[in-house]
Amino acid sequence: MSKTFQSVAMIGLGYIGLPTAAVLASRGTNVIGVDINQHAVDTINQGHIHIVEPDLEALVHEVVRTGKLRATTKPEAADAFLIAVPTPFKGDHEPDLAYVEAAARSIAPVLKKGDLVILESTSPVGSTEQMAQWLAESRPDLTFPHQFGEGADISVAYCPERVLPGKVIHELVENDRVVGGMTPRCAARASVLYKIFVKGECIITNARTAEMCKLSENSFRDVNIAFANELSLICDELNINVWELIRLANHHPRVNILQPGPGVGGHCIAVDPWFIVDKSPKTARLIRTAREVNDHKPHYVIAKVKAAAAKFANPIIACLGLSFKADIDDLRESPSVDIVQHLKEMKLGELLVAEPHISDLPKSLVGDNLKFMDANEAVARADIVLLLVNHQAFKEIGMNSMQNKVVIDTRGLWKTQ
Ligand code: SAJ
Image 1 (spheres, rainbow, N blue to C red):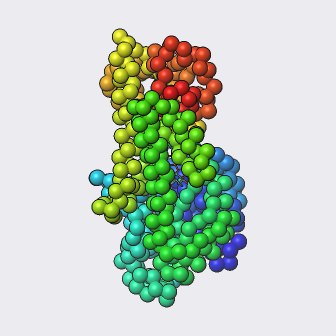
Image 2: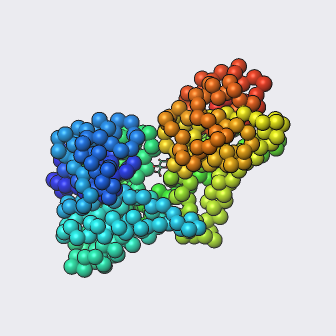
């Protein structure tokens, strides 16, 4: 157990906060988990979880049993505060820091001299300074790094989460962390905290660079996927198999093109690049264009299905997969859901939708011309097979069952086009 941090409060018990709280507690630190969602708090205090993530339930069960993790809706005093709350966008892709502000203002009353506050939420550059200002407004009796530098009563840092959904418990421990302090001492103190559970390197920088680093990582991936998606359109025009093309190009020792798909989903890659565009609208041309290319891809897929459907009187269309990526159950910001919803509204024919990772269709997809069913059955009955997610389960559907059907494979799972 760290002598410096006897107790840590984790503000936000979602996909990042809960695993972080549980891993930290499993190392012997007393962790208070705070969330405004009473259902989440009750579930956690019973040793269960309200989200889907491999290995998390057993870990939460254990640390709640030993008393190292306790959840509550109201912040309590602690030596360090980690904030992992959502940072969505509002209006025309403007970052919305309302949850960060609410979290900062909620911990302010319990802050005491010597405490450390770390923001982990993916945030636009400048957010950590903004958070320190909100804290200072609420606690004029304490001093903060933007006012008093190294001599401040409270240390403030930014350390972005970088874990991949589905591998969170492993990556939380193994990944390197970028730790950005508002002063070097703030960074050093935050690094001591992360070293309680991080086996990877904790690399120290300033808060603004750490904020930009996180945004750059996800933008890099978005730009690379946009390149792959643009190639897929070009290859369709030139009658080239894009999957073969990328496989061949990637044999070059310095080329690593990602895979095209039906669009980019999830709440990170499709959101974070806009935080850069919002701050530097004139300069971030490539980053904006990549977002536009990726956002256009679902429309391209819909047009392809429409063209195929025009050859049938009342086509049956099998739509395989709804999640935002392979082998998970997460439908949030999923381009596949958008595509199926559009096809449903266009009334192109009968839609047979398969998604092996969920038990019920989302409300937006319920309708007369749409049925939820097993993938093999959907393929057997279909005129057109639209593959939207490269789930392992779909790989096993034999190409024999596709004979005489139009196959639109947006993920290259069957390498048919
Ligand atoms: N996708 C493609 N082609 C690819 C790879 C992905 O179309 O070659 C699509 C996926 O199907 C999905 C979307 O991109 O719709 C995003 O999936 P992802 O696996 O790339 O990323 P996320 O959103 O699950 O997690 C990302 C990760 N960031 C990076 O890999 C740089 C993760 O490490 C971050 O912690 C996470 O964002 C986050 O929370 O920011």
